[in-house]
Length: 425
Ligand code: AMP
Ligand code: GLY
Image (tube, rainbow, N blue to C red; front, top):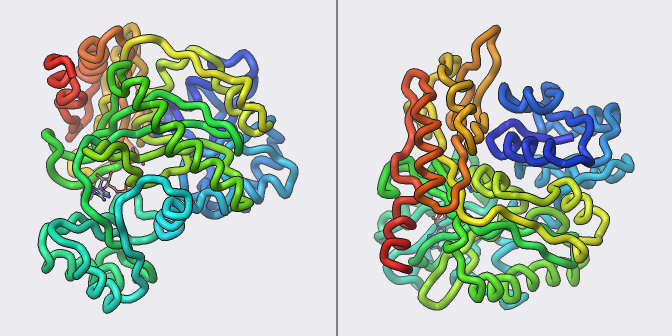
């Protein structure tokens, strides 16, 4: 059973379907694309009682949880109490994502590199702490806000307005009790995902996400407008350093504190002049990263996830197609602001028939004979290739066959990496 209904879950469903171990696959709620791979059941994954009832009825061998909200609410714990196995962290372990104050203090306790910070519980305390930072400062709400709780403040006035707005509730609609001030870091961002069985770690491919709505990384933050992977993205020495100095100490630290981490650990890294620094932890598969990563997976995803749950990840290794991959997201016009839904999408069969391409549905719904838009991020065109340029060309050619009113996508996914490659770096 798979919980969630976005592009990440479509990519997960597609990889799970390739496993000889997966017979019946149930997805809740799923979407119009996932419906071709799984039996979809309507459900709000954040409604724990309904999710537990569904699992109790279906008795899946394993439940894989896509989004962060049910993890933060304790779905893995609730399923466990009913004797049902789930891939994902417990509520206590998921705290690495749902409480930034917890994750910063955790990194400090375990000497894991992260930006300097202060956790403040009142606007007055935050204004005092502001005096300790110079230049640009990053101000963050403590909890889960789907990327909207982070404000990069270039001036003292901006920072004071952010502090006031977060504590009063004017900015996010809910008054924050904890606000973080953070040193502003410069560098390339990298999404480094790994799975853990609570003891061992096994890395997936490193990816880069494009979070801003506009080309050239401008405009508002979104859930992610595209992602790519490439064998050239992360040198083996750097990868090993991250595993030994960040990933393994995180898993060891969680085990030592009595909250072992089982699931996907997603390191949001800034590759700075002083080395990789953790910007944030996520405790689940990334979206759209997963849409770029899993098409390159050659080994069995189900077996790897089961090995995590059974605490025997040390026997498991992921095997990948060599080369690169890219995912370009098509969004509704207006996203991440207001947008229309219910618009019919044309060209899906033609796009999906381009060899080497997967069209992953995100916000789609079947309405009679038509597949219609049903969200901000509508779909992702993913492709693998020997080179990043090849993968991008395929993904864009497939996306060119899709149409809906107001469809928007960035034309520069992976563009900076292509320039870097051309310069041999
Ligand atoms: P977070 O949710 O903490 O990952 O923050 C969302 C985004 O804000 C990150 O992906 C970065 O682009 C940016 N960001 C967060 N913290 C910092 C920081 N300390 N320095 C620079 N940029 C940051
Ligand atoms: N793409 C970033 C995330 O999944 O949080």
